[in-house]
Length: 169
Image (cartoon, rainbow, N blue to C red):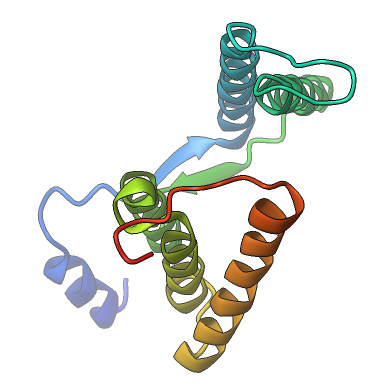
């Protein structure tokens, strides 16, 4: 082992276990099973809502359709993994970008109603572009502003939905 590798290992904090290494096949099957469960969860809970009438969809249409689509796509992925030959690949969980994404999504889930949908979406997009995509702050601000404008137009103008505006609007 080279001297710089020994020094790097000696500087690592004690008890550091990230990233964790897993068998790729098991991880893919577990991920497919979790996505099937999430899709079925959304579809089943959508059954408690109204589906609407012929011309006007109700609040159950999108979660039901997306839940079934998610479950079907995850089942197709799981089936493909089961049919493929095991190859002993390893995958790692716990990379910096994954942790940043989880933290940003967790923040967004709490911020939607508190600071507003469009500000939250803009901050989420900018954060992911800067820290995960490694885009400059200027480009991230421009892209997040443009995307937020598209979201506003789609939800407010085209669909006529009033999303949480937050305390600023």
